[in-house]
Image (tube, rainbow, N blue to C red; front, side):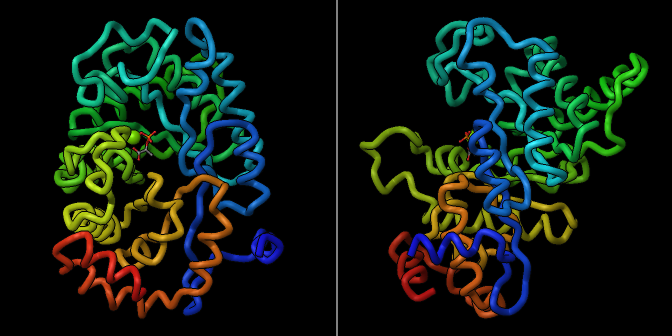
Amino acid sequence: EQRQLARLRHKPTRTRDGVDIRLFANAESREDVSEAHGLGAAGIGLYRTEFLFLQRDGLPDEDEQFRAYRDLVLGMNGRPVTIRTLDLGADKADRTGLVLGVEPNPALGLRGVRLSLARRAVFETQLRAILRASAWGPVRILVPMISCREEVAAVRALVHALTERLRDEGHAVAGQVALGAMIEVPAAAIALPCFIDLLDFASIGTNDLVQYLLAADRNNEALGELYSPLHPAVIRLLHQVLKLGRERAVPVAVCGEMAGDPAYTRLLLALGLTDFSLHPGTLLEVRRIIRDCDLKALRRRAGPLLRAVDRDGIGRWLDRA
Ligand code: PEP
Ligand code: MG
């Protein structure tokens, strides 16, 4: 079994009916990056930069961040690397001093892009480091916790201004650094038509999207099945976002745990997903399932999936897929 999976390392991620699906890797460390490269990942779909900030006292400066991002880019050897800007908040233990105080509702508080826009200097330092790394290979910037057009517009303007400034200072910056939003706040998923024109790509963070959509804490074990992506609200919203991405030719990935769970691979394909971003640990298993799928047949079965009225109905769809 393991040996059979290992043989898929250099096989294309192509369905039986000949459609290429892209498997990007989620990475948090240098080890994840080399593993992703060895597995033939299409690129890094989510690099969580919190780790550079959490395992130390004080903040990493621009050069330290630049070196970390550049090494990441070099490690992927020309494949795109998606660097997510800081997603810190009062929910993560932090010694940087960036997160002030205790919030009554950290998941609903000053986290992700909200914190970045409130601590402008720290955000600029990170964006400068990422932009400088873009001179070494394809880099995409992914912004967490976007909830409205204003935030995307503010980040876009900042990236533009910093690019000009860096060039004036004599730094090389790639001609095109794609800017994308995490779709993980329900408002962003629903209002995506209002700001998709500002995005080069999007990535659905199902971990948080499920939590906010279902009002179910992602870390509260007592909620059991209530925290589950198999709720009709989640399925319908995923379908809607993926459809809009297709219509507007904006690539939309899923980068939450759902994308790496082999139990959901067929369901996501049926909903129209073509870009997965997942932990390297299950990449080959997901590739195996995709290579076994008839995508056209699955897509034809999207109707019944969208009409399912409860978790059991969606579960029965999964059993038959
Ligand atoms: C998500 O919310 O689905 C996600 C990928 O981000 P994180 O798990 O880091 O919040
Ligand atoms: Mg998230």
